[in-house]
Length: 138
Ligand SMILES: [Zn+2]
Image (spheres, rainbow, N blue to C red):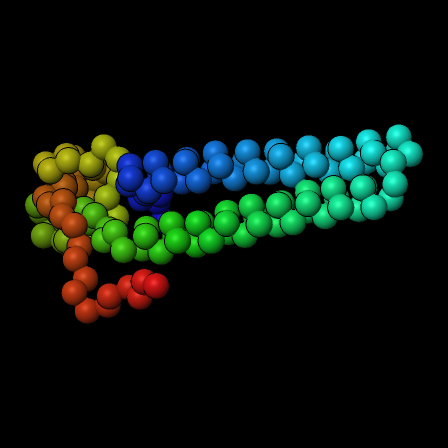
C-alpha cells in the first residue's frame, strides 16, 4: 500500500515528533548527568533519582509516540483509496488498480496482456467510497 497521509496529519505528526524528540533529549541529558554524578562521587541517591527521572520521561515520550502513531494509522484508513480504471479499446477488458502518481485520464499504458496489440488506456480515476464499514474511533 502506498503512503496516503494528508497534509494535516503530517503537520500534526511533525509537531508531536518535535516535542517527543525534545523530551527524549532531556531524558538522555538526565541519564548522562546521573552517570556524571556517579563518577564524581555524589551520593548514590542522586544518581538513582536522576536515572529514574530520565527513564520515566523516556518511557512517557515513547508511550506518546506509540499512541500518536496508532492514531495516525487509524486516520489513514479512513481515507478512501483512489482507483484508476484501465481499459483496452480492442477487447474491452476493464481492470482497476490503486491510483499511482502520474496517472491521468486518456494516458496510454503498456500493451494489453490479452491481445498484446492495443495499448491500454486510463479511462477513469475516482475515489472509492465505502458506505458499509465505518471505522471505529475512540
Ligand atoms: Zn486487449
